[in-house]
Image: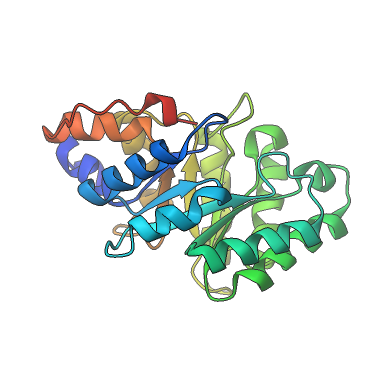
Length: 258
């Protein structure tokens, strides 16, 4: 049971499930290459970077098991489906393993399911065999019933993961949103291929990580939390993980957090 795990065990599990992320507006190539080196050194699940940095980061991680993720339709969720598909295709060609796409949540809230469907289906088609994480921007959806509806919509349009947030809006991951999304995944698990969960934004400590790990295993079952099913989208979290594990490397990541 995850609630019997020591802090060190939680830290190790969170590290294995971490998408080390730099989506800062002013980030640089040097910062992204440093992020990739740090991810490889500590063994995170992935790095998540802007599309323009995918190629050099993928080249830097070519001999590492760390996966490369990028974002499309991000953060607004308002880009044209054709443009989002083209960006996805280019990112895959540049070496991306995973695509994090923002659900057109404003269109979704306005009842324009066709617009939301067009973007998700375009990305799913362009991504090929690569994983697609759909960011539903749960903090903007607010109502739990709408969050559930968006999660079901994402899964029905090919999501391999449902992700809470971009981290670019006032409200990021919350316990209520996580519980709603996980409840949908549990209810659909017999009818679809396995779908994972990514908690993103505002997760900075091992105690924060413990909450989401325990909640996930309470709903989905013991042992469910592993990199193929579960991710954290954060970078400040790595500092606290390393502190708990006694492996601090002196590198400050808070500027990367989102």
